[in-house]
Length: 348
Image (cartoon, rainbow, N blue to C red; front, top):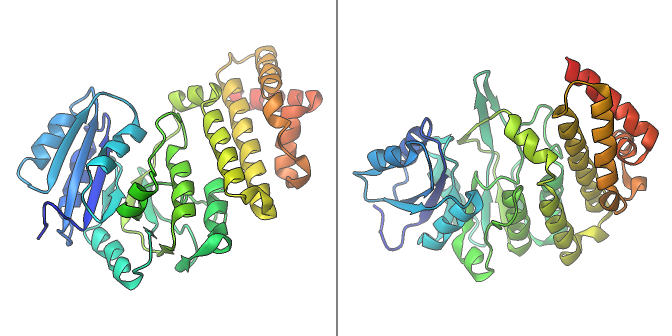
């Protein structure tokens, strides 16, 4: 049974406008074989019926606490759950996902096997209307301590394909699929940064990985991750440069942790930047009317606006495919070629 004052695990679910899915999410958590857990449901100012669904599904279970707040974003919602958490361990579950009934028990068992661990990590089954795809963030279980051993974690934060199989859907930078030792988060003041419009979870994990004494990965997929499409809103936000604050934050952490002195990680970091800036160029092009001249002007203008950022990238460390993207961002002729390719893609 759960000790309401000292549960083993605090499960935090940030909710914003997920009326169609949050009921199933909560039900899967309340059906866990491990009952020594509290459930913190943080409604972040939903404007649909999410709060009503939460109240109905959680009404008769004393393990549930509902936290209501004005809409401040997912980072603030997760932080509200963290601040209210009483468990020795904390895990995050997104409101449109579900977990297998042995999910908490499987992760928690690792805390006994690895008493020095600060983070227990696992993978997922990704699903959508097309079916399910079992993911493997890494090909085998492992335990890491020290900066050198953590390199593979940092690398995958910046390059989701690193050590993954072809066709991967997501990567280790997500906040779910993990148990975090709450004492580590509290003592080191580790929280999600609500000032970042994008990648708060990835950068949170970068800080956690650096602070952790020991991290354990198990290739267990008891988390079921709902894959969403990239809609018009995502395209518009990318075109606005909303990844720039995250890029700047990553740059600071790379310097602070001295990771930029590692050739492998420095290369991954420069590749990540080029990929993000190129995605921005693509988004700008796709939002234009389907005329080559408009797309050409938009691509040229965005490349000019990114010039200062692109000057910080060392093209010598880039592989050929990424160097081509870099040239499309920095060379006027190659930028015109990119505009033509994006125009043709737009036409299809």
